[in-house]
Image 1 (cartoon, rainbow, N blue to C red):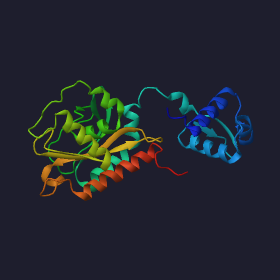
Image 2: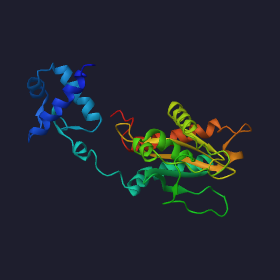
Image 3: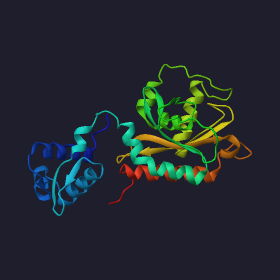
Image 4: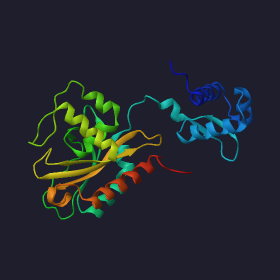
Length: 256
């Protein structure tokens, strides 16, 4: 049987120590209490602080358990909060690509649109905010299905609907498709949900890397894809850039 991971054991012990104290503890106190070298304790504290489990008092080497630790298992972020943090970047994505930009999150076995920016000059369009869209047949949904364990669990035993002739519905095909999404870090749809429509989406991550939403664009196949029905590289880059920017709003990838 594999042994335990020492660094995880030490981090757990550190959290237990801090949670048991009413006042913040200094680095030396923590190191001495756990029998750790000062450098080792400092490295663990920095990591725990970066993922939001420990707070460091400004200008000191004293630490306490962070409020984020007690929110583990709490309800998912409100869609309005997700929208508020992503609003500017989603709007900018629509402006840069000239396509409709959408932001979605997993709720109740579907991807739910939290924000929708119309394509400029696109004529009559219907606001999609609040709309449920399928996980397996849309780029936004595929991202959530690939990276959110809750979304994946929600589809166990469910027979996917075939919206078009190209919708992937067999289990092997879906699993292969999702593996590709995880490998490349973005998803696409081409004629899978609505005929003549294509989309590109990328994950939005919170501070620890957990995917809280997906952001992307949707539009006519001939605009989103090249002559071989492959998503245009420039558009993929724009979507990924927007996803990274929104993720930074949630604390992911920040170095400070």
